[in-house]
Image 1: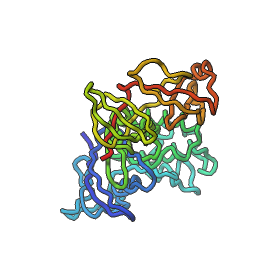
Image 2 (image 1 turned 90 degrees about the vertical axis):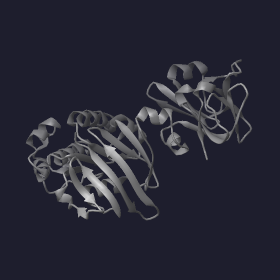
Image 3 (image 1 turned 120 degrees about the vertical axis):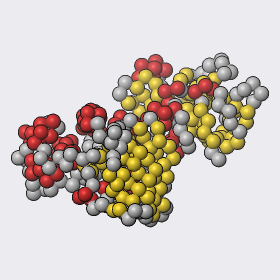
Image 4 (image 1 turned 60 degrees about the vertical axis):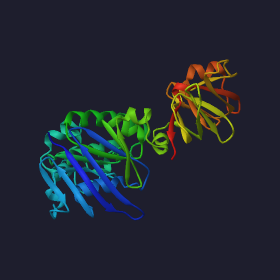
Length: 341
């Protein structure tokens, strides 16, 4: 089975990028903040950046091996690269751009752009330009597909539809594919596995749902969109752990921990009410609502340092308004603890 194996180190401006990762016939996303080294990883695979040491191998072919002094030129590597800005030739038509990569007539039909074959990039929408860039990358019949921020140039409406199309395409191709993005929602929707890259280090690689359920660090918890409440944990004799936050609020968790921790609570695990429920097994935070943000048929409600996500019907029933004092309630079993070292 074809796979992409990476194990290299490369100095960057403010830190050292070190990466060990294997990508099978799947899509793996690298996520992280700007400047974490995500795009540099793609450039090193494609031969556009040279690692200081290490190995880049695809299938049975070695593209880079510092020990054996192997360093194939970019054109010698079987890579399809979709750049963030698509890098289409403005003076060439869609057909000519795709043919620059190889014979891609069938790809024009497959990606729904055959009717645009004679059009130049300036006349295309962002979604259409992305399809052309994908067709050109695939026209090389690559062993691995690399995508740099593939959805960043799209507006919110186009992004959702193109994301769904891209997911289906990547699944059908069955190629090792590596994409980078700063948007966890894109990564979760497109990738089989997600790696979180911070200052040149892969801090966790797992299925998207596992990153949310079991974050390995506070950064992973925050990046995947969960609430992170910092406090000091102390085990109790009843098997629970009590976490005291900076403002004196005490929370309970069924996780065992001792010392400084981040208490991870998912927005959909938080219920809202006007008065605290009479249940000592639940955690309660009472505060004024700072914001109400509609998201489809749900509403994200921020209060007291946490964000809850409730149905629009629940928000209407409670009559929630910015400034209203409201109680956020969540269970000890839904409060995960991440050690802060």
